[in-house]
Length: 175
Image (cartoon, rainbow, N blue to C red; front, side, top):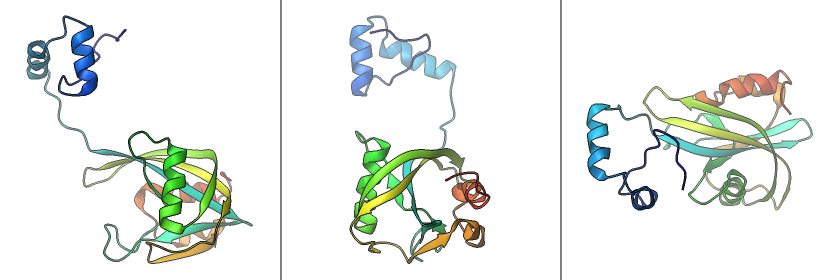
């Protein structure tokens, strides 16, 4: 196993145990000593998310969060968290089935955005085009769903992480 200089894995993790066993000189004592010498502040929790740009005849599907959710009543695109062991495309297909009751053919990656929220959280968003799906759209979790013309997107109150994408979609730069 080759590791680059400065590679760091916690020895309590399964990968850390492998590194500990196979690299010989990498010991818990050294790891702890290095952490004390170079303390690093904990960064914001980073969530990996896949989202769909479901496009039909010049319109895109947007979803409004429920009043009981964080960032209540703001608009977003359907999708959700990428679980361990899933690709972004697999996660998106699963989320679209759970949220909308459709079996989507996940198309190409349109864009990727990393956003840091003021409260300290961070999100890595991957947006995929979805032009084909089986089943009827069924609102299972949102306050409402809407098919909206791309140029009208800026009229909606979107999540902060989506706002740059909204400008690009409305101006015709994407899709």
